[in-house]
Length: 361
Length: 263
Image 1 (cartoon, rainbow over the protein chains, first blue to last red):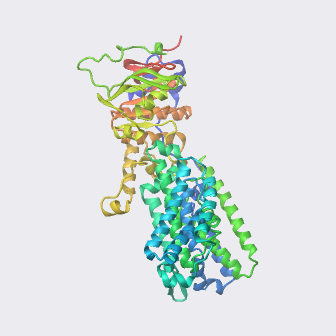
Image 2: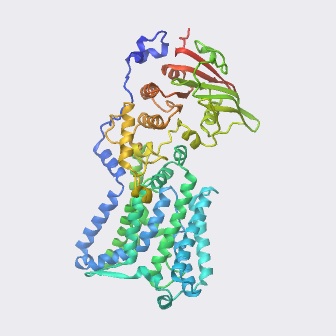
Image 3: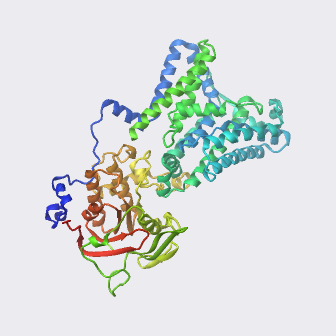
């Protein structure tokens, strides 16, 4: 391309003369030689679920060595899956919110409120169970929508919004339930559909509730939605850099509101699964759900700064917590060391995330 | 600043019969923010197949002019014509649908997504048939194929992996992806806002070559810059200078425009 040769052009300005000998190549996509540590950092950065996967594997190996038979018993392993059912479902809701660089402290409160609505309508008001369940799910989605509108249109920080709605939803829950538990027997006679997720199938000695299976299916569904649909890509883009996403033609406000609403709906499903898990409807149940779901998300390698993470990671994160709790309990260690270990895991997970985030800079 | 341009053509607005219709044209654009006049009767002509440079100091009104053209700002007065037809964009999406693509100064890329995902951000392709209609499944293979093809058209295809995350790319490479995206989807005009502002000397040079490649494909380009050397390197056909709070005056040169050497 002759016109590209700077020397052929007359009246070249003084400052251009140095360019004669300079590189004329167009932009290239070549990599500089990375050091092994950098390469490891990049590999882990692009596959954030590798570390939680390794931790889970090491946990299994460790406890099977320390506890042995009783830990590896299929019944015990399936029990771990049962124990993480609720946290797993709440973790899905939490993951999509955290992916947008937000946080939802109200997931547990939404879950309990939904379950109370289902119970009160089906048992107290005598509504048909499918209708009561639908109403409960709707209340969950509505709560999420309120969070979404406050975050998106009123432009309040997600932490503050959901800290506030946590109290509000919990208070509403106490008011509506009149702080009374609906007994398991009453649900069983009036609306057995509410306990649907408590039904279990036995595969040999292993025991899986419909709730755990539902949790796994939800994980698959949301992994698909996040990776394989435009909406999922938009959620990542909005969490990564909202301004860029807007300029790239994504309707960021709509995406954000839809994320919070969907998270609320998922919490509604968690409320339904909660009834199956504990049998009754209690306004005091699931108190630790808020923070446990964040724990699962963080240990699962999802970045609290948004844009990076996965549902699979959250599932592994929830399983890690369940595994360590179960393993330590079987080892006969004092319960306080369970909390201690989970705390260490959170700090290590966030430290690793910070280190990995340096790749982009 | 307009004094520094070598040859000039008649004042904007006087269109001779038989002369080509400007791809993008603005007449008498005014934008006021309260008592501040950001843009005072700006005129603007972009002819087919040319690069038009918009030059001006910070705060001169370059951005306002460009935002008016891309629908990000609604002008108070004046009209914009696309291929001779009056258009009125109320959002960037509308301008984009009309075929005006913009490479923003911050590139509008999402670092956590892959190159292919970024190129199709906001206009993803879905799989044909049942999976696409009911499960809204993305056609990743097709998007990657097109992205690869578009990048190689611009000579950017020494890239090994189209699934590489944008955050692993250098500044110049990211600029390359952003320009390739605009060139791939812009059917009428590509507008580039300070494409070399954040780059080093060497990368700037490469990006300027890239801009020429886009032009060679026949795409008219609006180049916003306050870097005269870069503008002159891009073989600009015409330059609009924007002076403070001001009228954009258009100057046209037949031959590639360049800076006169300072004596």
